[in-house]
Image (cartoon, rainbow, N blue to C red):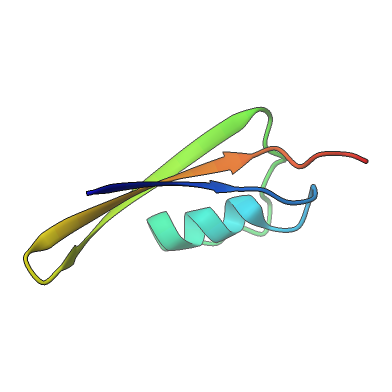
Amino acid sequence: MLFKVVVIGDSGVGKSNLIDRYTKDMFRDDMKTTIGVEFGHKSIKIEDKVIKAQIWDTAGQER
């Protein structure tokens, strides 16, 4: 089963770090601004099913 998730929010609030922490178990203080779209992925096993998450990271939008 595949879930696709898009993370949106203002620029500089930590969307990329949130995704990296969940998918790679890492946190960086020197994260660069996302240009365009990036994504991470993670698979977890629940009972006998493999659940895949594809998490898209969007660039923050200026208002």
